[in-house]
Image (cartoon, rainbow, N blue to C red):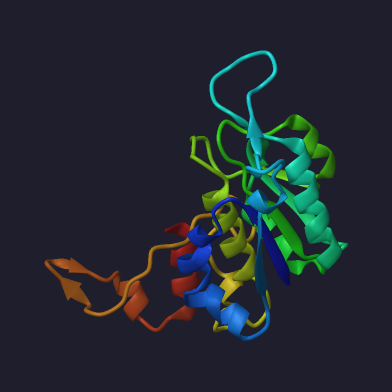
Length: 212
C-alpha cells in the first residue's frame, strides 16, 4: 500500500514509521511511505502556504492553492489513491474504517492540517474526513499517524499471527473491548491470575473472556 503524507513537518513521522510494525511493513514491501512537503507548493518567493481568514478571526488558515497542488502531485504518483483529511468536523474514526481502508486496493493520501485550519474549498479534493477524538491538537500529523498505524497493522502479513487482528479490541463491531489478559508470574503482590485461565479448559476460558 502506498501512503503519501502531505505535511509541513515530515520529520515528525521518522520515529513512528521507522519502528516496530510500521517499519516491518515497509521492510517487507507491504507498505510504502512518502512525504510531500506542503511548503514546496507555497506561493511566491517565501513559499507562503497560509493566510488570514475572510470574515476575521484569530490565526491563519492553510490556503487552498498549495493544498490542491500537493494533492495533484500525489495523484500523479498514485491516481486512484483515497484522499483523507483529519478534521474535527469529520466522522468519528473507528476500527471498521481502518479495516475497510486496509482491505482496499487504493493507496492513501493523508493531508495534515495546521494553524487554525484550512480553506474549506479543499474538501472538493477530499474523499473522506475523519475525527480521531473530541479534543484539540496543534496539527494533523498525530491523527495521520493514528490512521496509518491502525490501517497498516491490518494489512495481511504485517502482524505475526494470522488471527492477531481478528481477536482484539473493536475488531468485530467497533464497540467491544478486549478482555483482561495475564502472564507470568501467577501471583504478584497478593494479586493472582484468575484460576480459569490456568485450568486448561478452553471452553470455560472462552466463556470467561466473553463475560470479563
